[in-house]
Length: 636
Image (cartoon, rainbow, N blue to C red; front, side, top):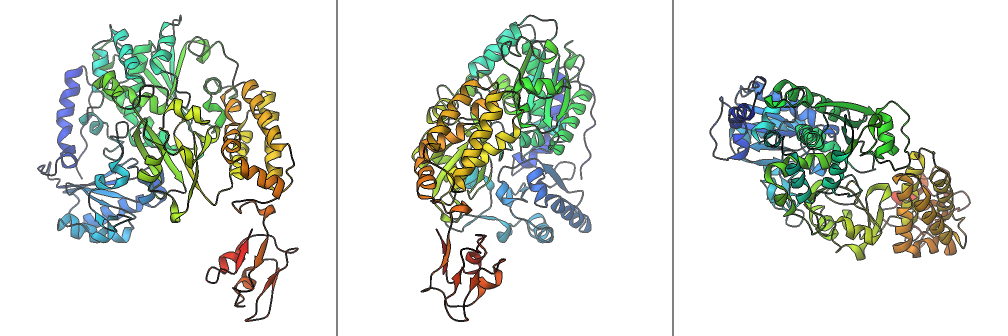
């Protein structure tokens, strides 16, 4: 293993460039297949160790490599590099071996000796550990040739999966803090820097989509002797992990983006509000802040410029409502996280009554690239009104779950059936929930709609923070709406009556519908309640919580009607509306169903058709699972 580069304070941009040149050779094997060894190091083994891959056993892979390399005397010539999220979570634990650029997936500790012997020592890929194309079954050696990666445009995620997130020198070697140095050289012309942000067309990636430059300008122009900036890292949407992955995989990008933002806005202090359920992200952020302060790219007299900026981390308790900016501000202040009416907006009176700007992780992390390469460069990606790229968390019933970054304007079909690989088990696509529990469910007729802010709102959904939950033909859309509403109802702070009482009332109606107690007029009542709650709720949580209901009624009204009028669940998922029976022509009397029934509801003689006592049946589905061979047990 190579020793780390000592950190000494950088006094100017020249010192930063000198450190970059000193650190650059350590990335050479990952950038150039013909690169010469550095300090005797001939190979880099990059191992994804974010929260997802760690839960799949990635740390065991690290230990196995270090143990086997030491046993073979290779520990000084082969460097094991821990990286953040590589994106293709479905394939974890995964590694990339450089300079061979060999990509291995689904590894186990016992696989490592063979990889060391064949790939590290022999220079040959081990085919059985490679990713295999689903259609052709052809093994793919280089990950960039895999469809999941090939269709992406990784701007924000360029360092995730490539750099060690705990080594600031690797970040600097890849042009890290160069944008900050550029911004500091223009510290007397911050209005020009603000114009670059405006020119980029960057809109807030936290869900609202408000133009970032305009938002910054409001806070910048607000009167006050003290200003704050905040990063909302309280990522709470079910199925969303974009912000977590960025903080775990590239924490210095966030630190640099906020530091530049503080300079432009005129704030010398900032807070990162991150939920305590993200311990790895918090640990790496704390380390990044410490390293940045040691180098002099954060803290007092940054890069000898005379300008000061300090960052703090506030750990939240995981309340979904604290994603709303006024509730978040109250939480930082040590108060209960509850929203307040606006105006005044935080840009005028926010944290401790001072002008405050709040953006999410992805928004801040875009700033270094915009300042370094220019607003026009960033605006060259995306659509006319939605510029740049967007990171999405692909979850649900897709083959390729993971993290993907695509240009704004790519269609939902391209994302789901291209990058995400289509639907699991060759099932039919039914809908995609976009925008988290406050978003909307879009059907297959919307698959060719471009994914951008305005297009999604027009369709009855919203961009949100970037969670995409895909469901197949076996999903009940009424029950899905009930699930998301139950989440937002539980997370409501209860301060305002429309959200507190309205969400409870809607949830009761949905529960009745899914349990066979729905009645005529329920659909219309849901629509009326939803509209009133959207208009009268105090904050964004209440204003958007009806979205899943309104969108499912709009596109899947027939499922609501079947539940209410026919007492049937078309997707065969609502237990109270199901009936189980045995097809006597298919049943061979094997008794497999009898053995697994927990309430003895199935009877029959051996080798003769069996029957189900519907009065005893609890509709657990065990009998269907036991009869997969003959498929005699069915439900409707």
